[in-house]
Image 1: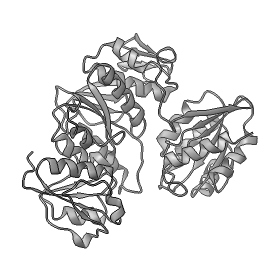
Image 2: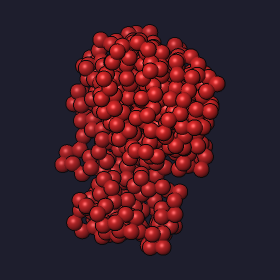
Image 3: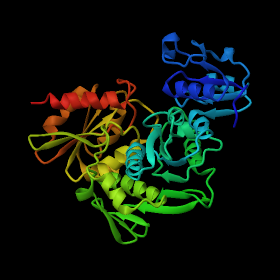
Length: 434
């Protein structure tokens, strides 16, 4: 689409908003950026952009195109007011896709997106296809499009917030890792969250590929479906957590060919391999790309072993599915550290795994007390106020040969600025143990 002579309004002055503004300017638009924050939030904005700090719904103005940054709640009053006066409403990734000539491997799911995106990006880079990681992880997609020579293929991580506002974005390969209730503090229902996620398939055709976890409940898909699983051996790709097979043929020995461990990472690796195989990338190239790879921090990250006890940082587990995946993948008895912000989730589904995997549980944060009350019938459990107190309480509960696992199962915003802040704090606390 041409933006020459158009009025483009962008909500959100963060990195995504800055990238969208720069791209819209390059395409000849008159660009206006609005944000509820003060002038300091607009640092680094391109020259020629009209800046509007302290934005309120009452200031909404007509525009040809409204670009909503993923951090702006599309259900909120600011976005609603501006959308009512916009000819079209999209997000930053949709804007970038309209000005990108290459191919997209889109990755979504409640959990595992970032690791899978990194794996896809590594394979694409080894294959000489560029493969920049962008979107919800890495850099904004618009920054990639603004490069002098954009890559032939991108690994595009897509959150539900970004998928809400796509219109024509079409992944040549769409990866669906999993789905579980999340973000109910933003979405009015689980169904609304699911509907946003499913938009990744909207513009695919029979010429495209959909890589999906086996037994996920999905509508009919136009694309060719390729399945992976760690429980269903009839899936096209199957793993026992150590080896990965495609239709019975060994494709990857995780312990020999990569730094990946556990069933959850086996799923991520299978999804990445299947996605890149759809682009006819040879197996030897894919194996070489994965050799020595270690997952990003805060994802079942081994911090240290002290007195025979492993300390794992899974702070990225900000929902129940991630917590359940972390518990399910453990082979040693677990003392679980769980808690944080109340997101309105029902934790009763965790009880069978606690009985099977956990020696004890220590809760912390805003939901410490209700979680202790729920978990106490299943496992020895105590409540604490802070993460530091939870670690102190967990240590005497963890005998030699066990694992202290921080897998909070919810977001961190009651006490931390994000899961990275929480994970870094846990790492520091563990490294201080003597």
